[in-house]
Image (tube, rainbow, N blue to C red; front, side, top):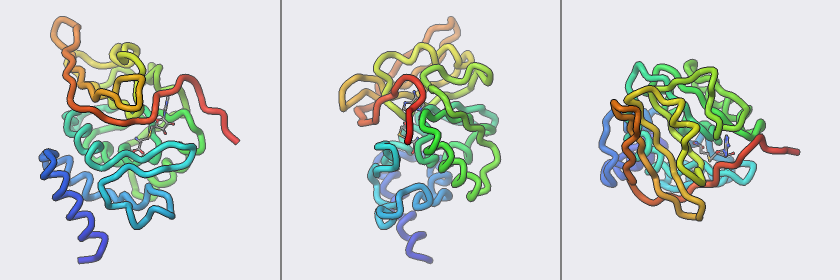
Length: 214
Ligand code: SAH
């Protein structure tokens, strides 16, 4: 067994201990080499359970949070999933192993291009990406079975909830401060949503509009 296999195994065990017990989710996470998505200078920390800086002052999420959010989303193999905030592409790669199609939106063109390259390297062929303002969702591809927001929404994600299929699930960090509440919204038969607060999280904010670069 190689060193990275060993590290992956240890991380997966630690996620399981922390309550990420969905076997499909754990298998997907074990199968995606996180070191591909982290900055070169953090390579030795790729399999640690911590968030790490990526370009454009953004972050690749902590594996435990990726596991927790993916598990909470209850993704099925026939689902079309929308992810807001492609970032490094890691969460997107994990979702691609669980869903039929993943649609991912990012406001930084350079992050998106880099993430696309990595997804291609992994041979992922069921992901569609878009350079855009994810706060507006992806109207042309809506409705979605599942939606995951990986940046903190300052308010209830009402626009995105409109792009969810009846009975669908949306998971998003919601709040204006440095600590937000991770919420899960489940569509009800009468068109309303049931909201559950799962835990406190720390995400970079969801920012309106495209990012200016260079
Ligand atoms: N899912 C990512 C986590 C990225 S951090 C991963 O696995 O690495 C959050 C990302 O959301 C950042 O890349 C940030 O640029 C992006 N983001 C913030 N506001 C956005 C918006 N309105 N539309 C699209 N992306 C946004």
